[in-house]
Length: 493
Image (cartoon, rainbow, N blue to C red; front, side):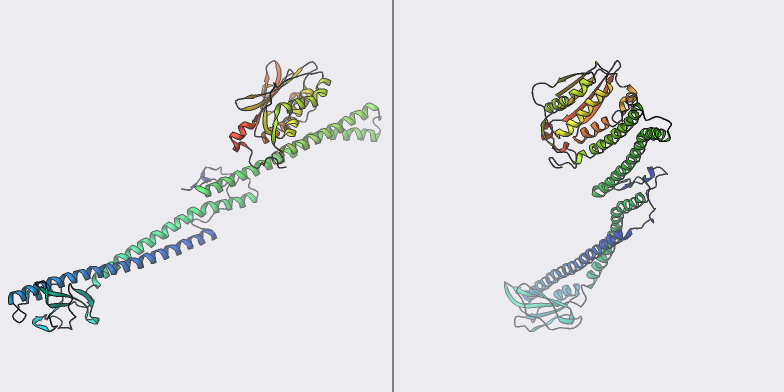
């Protein structure tokens, strides 16, 4: 059953223009018309079949009754023949009484087909007889009504026959009753079919109409519009999928606005400083000394770094559509990333250690993307750690997951900042002090999430930070292939 949950929505979030109560819309009208045509055809067909069946059933029953009556009359005539030892003196009053009780006109004939005196009824007049049969027969005597005959048997020998002629219209009473009942049943079935058709049509089209109205409201700018309909089967899937799509569109638009605001904020400071410095040089308020030009050059480098980081973030966000996955040794990737960044780390005065074990650790991933994520983590350590600190990179398998840890003995991250370290363009205390863009860890999160993994950060009260990456192993993927991110195709760019 479909349940409309619109009453639970806030008053400030209309779901679109209201529908006229009871309105079906073009699709609903067509669907209802199709149901009506099917209902009418079905009721008409069943009614015709019922009437034909009732007519034939009544005719068969009447036929059996007439033959039974003819047999009893023939038996009475045989008794009269046997008692009188012939037809001339036979008393056929008992046979006539049976025929009269059945409302039929009796004619008795001898073995030669001649009418027996006293063997005719006194009803509608004697009619023309029919040839005798061994066990009896039934027929219609033209406009005079149906007839039935039976042979008069004495000692297994046919000594004559009886003919019963029934009045016309003898079966009309039962057929008229059948017509009445069938007509009432057909009318009731038609009304029920129309009511069910209307109900089903409303239930089928209501979600579609609601989703269409919500789509129009969403297109008109109401980003809070949602269908919010519980319906069974595909209709419920349609409504839920539409609401999920609307949520994603809203989130994407909010993220786009937030990104534009963050970019403007990040670029405003270096651009303002660069503009002010250039104006001082242009107006002669400052000499173009080497120190002044170096400061301006640093501002351009910061601008270039912010723009590069933003490009890297956009590239990471599209990674799930461009991953080139294969079975790779995570230990080898970790060692390669450490080797590439070792010079940068040692220049910053840091000691680098690796703990990867001797055996391989296979994951189903894009080696270049993982190398990029680990490189970002090591660059962060080089930027924020103090000379003399130690950076330890480890790789291991835990509970069916490949785990990479990048731990340092640096100043650490305040506890209140830990939940936000992977947010895009979010800069903590150390990032603001060192001029970081707040993008590096957001890139790491996007790359790891694209592989179906997760990231986490922890920092102790005495300093030191540990960034943990968790990835499904190749064996886990083979056991549960559904863990791949939807939309990804291994090995396809």
